[in-house]
Each structure stands twice: as C-alpha cells, then as structure tokens.
Image (tube, rainbow, N blue to C red; front, side, top):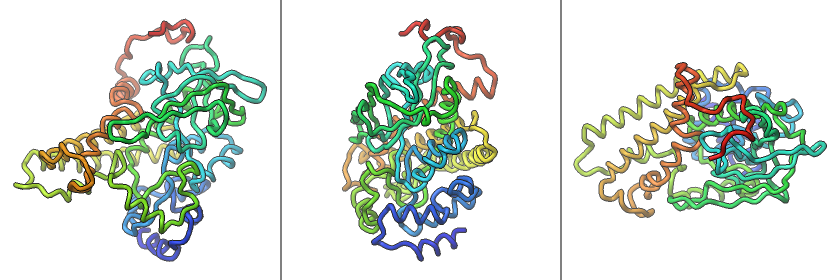
Amino acid sequence: MYQDTRNWIDENWVDTLTLRQWWILMNDARLSFPRWPAAWFGRDASTAEQNDIARAFADAGVLGPPTGLGVLMGAPVTMTFGTEEQKQRWLPSLATGVEGWCQLFSEPGAGSDLASVSCRAERDGDEWVINGQKVWTSGALHSTRGMLVARNDFDQPKHKGLTYFIIDLEQPGVEIRPIKQMNGAAHFNEVFFNDARVSDSDRISDVNNGWAITTATLGFERSGLSEGAGGGVRVPAGKQAGFLDRNVGELLEYVRATRSHPDEYGGLLSSLQTINVSGGVNETQRQKMVSLYTNEHIAEMTRKRITASVKKGQSPGAEASTMKLHWTNGLRISRDLGMELMGAEGMLTGSDLQVEGKVQHFFLSMPSASIAGGSDEVQRNIIGEKTLGLPKDSQADPATPFKDIPKN
C-alpha cells in the first residue's frame, strides 16, 4: 500500500493544480479517508493500510487530505445516523474539503454538564428558530456549517428535550466572536444565535433524541483526536479558510514558510528528538520517552477496537474516553519532557530558538488539550460509570423537567 500510494502521488502531484482539484483527485483515488466505508469515499482500510497511506503522503512532503471537525466528527455522525438524502448532500463536500464544520455544544452554563444546554430551538413549520449562545467553538470562523445540539422542550428532563441539527452558519442571526488564547492564537470562538434558522431536513435523527447523537459525536471526537493528523502537510477544509483555489505548489511553500509551530496538539515528538541537550539525557528523561512509546502502543490497540466497532455501525463507547486519556497523557508527558530538555531556554519564545520555538508554543497550547473533547475528569467519570459500574455523582432526579432544575 505504501509504494502504490507513493506511485500515485508521483503520477498526480502537479504544482499548478488548485487545492480543490488536488482534493478531488485524492478523493477519487480513495486516499483521503481510507478508513471510511467503501460506499462513502473510503476503502474500509485496516490500521496498517491507513498508516502506510499516511506515511506515503508524509514522506512525499505533499499536501494531505482535508482536516477539521467536519471530517473528524461530522462525517461519521452523518454516516451512522443521517438519512440517505443527508449523506448524499453532505458527505461529498466533506470528503473533498469544500466545507468545514464546527461543533456547537458547550455553553457558558453547560460545559462538563453538557446536558444542561439551554440554547433554544422552536419549531416554525418546516424550520426551527435558534436562539442562544455557544462558547469554546473550535474553528467556527472557518466553518460553513455547525453540529448543533439545542433544547426544544423545556418540560422534558434535561437529557430528553434535546434535538440535533446541522446548521448553516452563513446566515443572518449568526454572530461569531474569536477568543484570544495565551499562545497567541484564536482557535476558539463564541457563537451567538439570534433568530437563526435551520430546516427540519437538516435535523439528525428524531426530535428529542439529540442527547444520543451528541454522545456519539463526542465518542467520534475523542477517538479521532487521539489518531493525530498524519498524512502529509495539512490545511483546514472549507472555503472560509481561503485555500481551495490556491495552487498546491504555492500553498505548500506558504504553509512551510508560515507554520513555525506544529499543530497545537501534535507533531512534537519528532521535534524533541532533534533538540541538542548539553550533558545528554538523564534516566528520568529516558523513562519519559519510554512512557510515550508505551502509551502510543496501548492506544493503538484501543484504536483498533474502536475502528472495528464503527465498521459494525456501533457508536464508540467508553473506549473513546480511554483514547482521549491516552492522547492527553501523551501530550502531557511530551510537554514536560520538552521543557526539561530545553532547560532555561524553555522560558524564551521565538522562531530563532531550537526547533523554531515549537516546544515553548506547545507548552502554552497544552492546557486546552485536557479540556477539548470533554475534560479528562469527565472521561474518567464515563469510564467509571459505564464500564466499571461505579455509582454516579449525586444529581437531580433524572425525571425532573429541565425548567424545574435549579440553576446555579
């Protein structure tokens, strides 16, 4: 699979192609998302085949497939729960990178307790009217659509009165405000809905079944985040990102010249291996390197279990929470090891430092990794309750209508 993929890249990569054309070629060859089902632009690839394809793109140094939450979560949600019409309408645009999607879940009053969302969806004929606020929305500024969970029935218990939509963000009534982070980026956003509208044909599953789809989405996110990017140089999907009609040769040079840091949550280990450490690596640091290696191999076994479940049409269970913990554990070890190896230089920032300052940038980016996709504490609760059978935390009677639950 590796050599076949390298041969295909050599035969098809032309600097003057637009990114749009390149992603169409990759999709037609079933190389963008080989783990996807063969019926929907994939090839039902095994983990080994997926890794061979990703390595071929990385070694060739060319642009890889579209990236973003649309392909990470939106596509598997649509494949698993969407109607045939929805699959026909959305999956081609996701597979070819024409659209980028974001996840409209968290609210100021509903973070770890996500079922407490109060963003309102009111039925109006064949449409729904959306009012409320979402926060910590990754990539909203570069998204065409959003995966939205909203409360349509305040008389139902909090887990029952929710419905799930794919909403168009390019409409009046949607305002997106970026949130500046301590690493200088503005990856997260606030999103405000003021009489925004979404068609009932864009509803996923049944009315009041939104919580089931939400938990499945989080499962896809947690398992997918742990797989890392891989597969060549990555750029975000969607026309809002502004890359689709640029030549791939020009775009590749632009990305290489401007991206002095790895992806916020990945790409650090290879950089750590190139750091010049005066006096060598000590025993504690060597042990951390072994821990990283061990963590990744255990994660790979869990990843295979999740992949097998998804191919059977099953939603990821507590294994997805385990994958998320593997991911953040590996990042946490990388963060600490990187700063130890840098020594006093770790207190500086700038592209003129070793490995272009990637270690320091990663140090400032890492705290949000343990929150993204559900905090580590939430993951441990899920594993404890759903897998180990431990008692749940005290909470309101699950039959209590949402409107009657005291608000803090």
